[in-house]
Image (cartoon, rainbow, N blue to C red; front, side):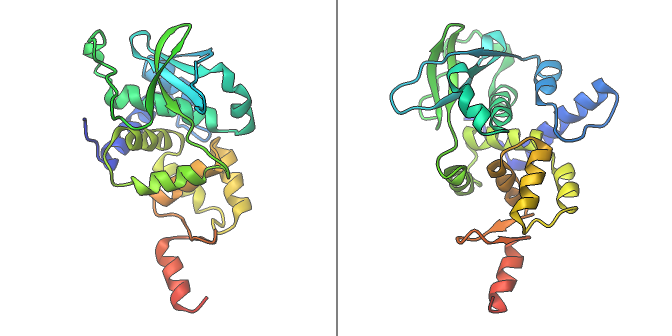
Amino acid sequence: MKILRNQEIEEIAAARLAELERLLGRPLSPPIPIDLIAERVLGLDFLWEPIEELPGEKILGGLIAKKRLVVLNENRKALFREKPGLERSTKGHEMGHWDLFIDKSSLDHPTLFDLEGHGPLVYRSSPAGEVAVIKALYSDPEGRELVREMQARADEPHEARAVNRYAAALSMPADMIRTETMKIDRTRWPDLYRLAKTFGVTISALRVRLEQLGLLYVDEHGMLYESRDAASGQMNLGF
């Protein structure tokens, strides 16, 4: 399996953002136009179609590499409406598979999507053809399982971790999110919710991104701190 370090993923995402800025002739601002990156930088198109699900599965989207198509599950439109930002993260996830792992010169290779053992990737069918899709990353309460999974595999260089990092780096560029985070009180949930809305992401995705960048720490009781060190300092003071 191709191994990518977090810094490499951040650099690839930053290069895509810079390329879009050159094409548009202006700097980007939140929310980042994910669709334009897909269409104008990566050469991908989007399609809404029903995707077959097995009992108990929740499929959000997929990638048909040969057709350069990101397919979103039409059967899950209600979920996308319910969780603003989820559609963008799903698109970013599939864009990550394309940008980080697809060998563009070997798209006709018969074993391109031999996904055995590749975490949350599965094959499902849609009217447009076979789709390599991701299962929903959110559970109830919203985002709790996502946060646990991403923290658990933060140092594991596998594809699911890489594409999630890529999606976050596109939607919440490191320098941009740092700048905006410094403008708020990140120890208050209302401020974080407003920041999530500014970037067009879910609160769960924002939390993970801020924790990745060392800008937030949430303890087991849900208390917010500006960093893990800040939390340790408070505990040492007896709070």
